[in-house]
Length: 171
View 1 (cartoon, rainbow, N blue to C red):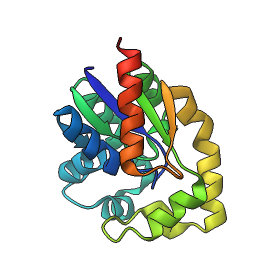
View 2 (cartoon, helix red, strand yellow):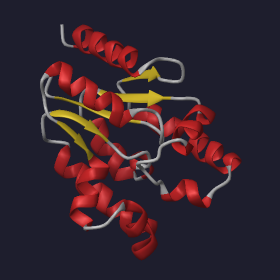
View 3 (spheres, rainbow, N blue to C red):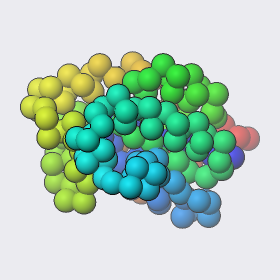
C-alpha cells in the first residue's frame, strides 16, 4: 500500500478516519485542507471570502497534484471531485475510498463541528446542501475504488472496513 486517498462530502469523516487509519498503519497522514491553509496563509473561509471559489479550487487542484505522489493517508476536501482534472488525477491513484454519509448526517456533523468553518455551509440552506451532495454523488463514485458508508458506523468501524479492503485488494 503506497497510499490511501479519502474522498467524500463535508462531514463524512475523512479527517477523523484518516488520522486513525494512518496511526494504525504507522504511515503519515495529510489533510489537503490543512496544506491549503498553510500555503494560503489564511483559513479556507478567509481565502474563499478574499479570492472566491474558483481561486480556491485551483489551489486545491495544485495541492492534489502535489500530494497524489506521496505515500500515506490523504484526506481531500469535499469539493475535490468537482474539477475534471482532479477526477482524472484521482483515477490514476490506487486505493481511493469514498466515505459516503447520508447528507443529513453530514449536515448534522458539520453544524456541530466547532473547529472547522465550511464556507459553503454558511451560504446555503439545508436543502441546498443536500442538493450539493446529490450533485457530487456520481463524481465521488466515479473516482472511488470502493465506498464505505459512514452514516451509522463509528470511525473505528470505518477504519476497520478500509483496512479489510486494503488487505483484500493488495493480496
